[in-house]
Image: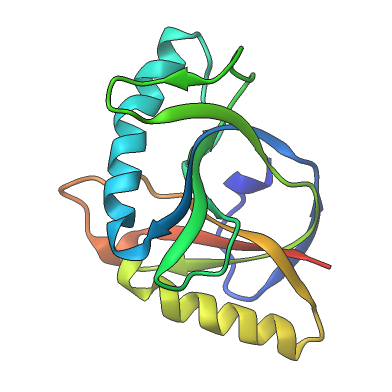
Length: 166
């Protein structure tokens, strides 16, 4: 599965199949409240999947379905071995549902460093693709290849950036 490919420092173009996922969906969510959305989702995602006998098959991700402004619409989730049998409402109010990372022609690049550098990494990535003549489509997504932990060095985080191409 391409979500587990080694890091790349230049844009890479791939044609991929869709990947089944389980996600929480956030529509028009305040940008400054995104960390809470991630925390609340991952707090219930893994225990829920485990209780249903569903195995993660790749790293966590966020898939953006709108351009970020003061708000953004996005999914937080994980690729899975099989879908849920239906939506699951967790005790903290998060609703988990089936989704997919889309199939098609995509571009990818890796960002090594803290999450604070993601905005700049996205800007450089999009600029490089447009300069090469590619047309970018939505959605776009981030794959958190390195699982964050309290004692890790943020400079070593690997986040892969993906865009769907027209």
